Picture 1 (spheres, rainbow, N blue to C red):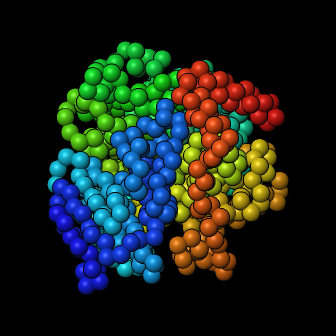
Picture 2: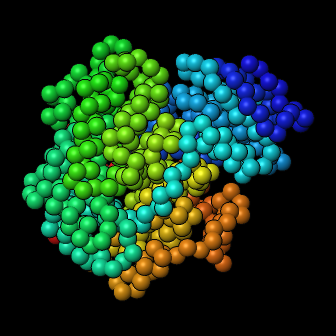
Length: 519
Ligand code: 9PG
């Protein structure tokens, strides 16, 4: 379907087509790129091609691997162009398995395997995005009426160095700070895929949940149920449950924990049974807040037990998870493609991880990777996805109050705290023993604050009587040139070598041991 957009075109329309092309009335000056899953870039950019992010070994874990080499401006489900007068034209799919791309003055959208609906809106940015989210809400479901809990999460201080005594001590140390959920992150399980308590949690997970509940809070747990590392028992005992490509080779879901990661085929009946039993088990342990991570694995391209479009498959996986955990559990989806999640989870991480630094030179400049952990990456993508708020609770990741174990300036920490206020989703990983009396009272005030929030401009917000500007996180690194480009090629190559990633993983573990000694 070809449509010429003119100044007399309707302000909003809904069309049905397997593919469509909008002819633009004049050349645009910017494009809104919408990345596939939580950690993929969402940003307004100019129209020049972006360098392909590296390393390629992480493409399935950070982007949509199907479109990662596309050089024209493009995006998952939706995109928008901005004209010189500040008006925008938004093209958004109202169904899954769809993509958009800008080719000169032609703005194209297509469904990968069927026909579907498209939403087209012209005019002011805020109104266009608000209408789009309203139409998505009608089709997929809106935000649940559960309030967003205030969360203490173990990841961004201890990473995998958690154990039972350390966590018990922290839970006591948090005292009467107004947290609703204490959430145990990665590090408790035998292996990714083998979801039983490891040797550091000898009393078992039910005892840990009991400990959390005894402080009057909800127990939260992290799992990555749709992936398994190569050395896991799950993968070794049930290889037939894992996604393969057309040639019969296992599909890579990326590389992490020093190993190759594989994706569960969520359409396989036995895998579905296993997933449902897993969700019931963690609920029976006493965990009512579940952070389910690396969920993109349900939507990677491959040959499935039941043949269906890949995002439709991911939604089948989400339904299995939701139905088996029960509607009363709070479900935070992470590493998740946006559309397949709608209506099935309570909250979604809408940006990359934060970290104890603003930006990594290696990742931003040399690898042009805007999905890796870092405060700038997290703020950039999160702010550009705030329009999702009517559809689910938007998780911007944690804020820092302590100045221990991070290199953030007070202004940078403040910006992250303000982002949490704007998202109305508040979490931290700060250790109570690292908080001075002053920091502790700042944290309390933050958790209790319910200031009015108003968006003033694309990146400017009014929080109570203060104005906050997130523009400093928006620029993209310039593509490397000359000697830096040579350095970039070496680092990009290293990022594809299993041994190099293993060394990085070991170095990470080593520095965690140091943190552990300090607490
Ligand atoms: C635990 C962590 C934390 C964190 C999650 C997720 O390759 N990547 O781009 C990549 C990004 C984020 C990430 C892992 C890998 O972190 O977002 O909050 O739970 O897992 O392992």
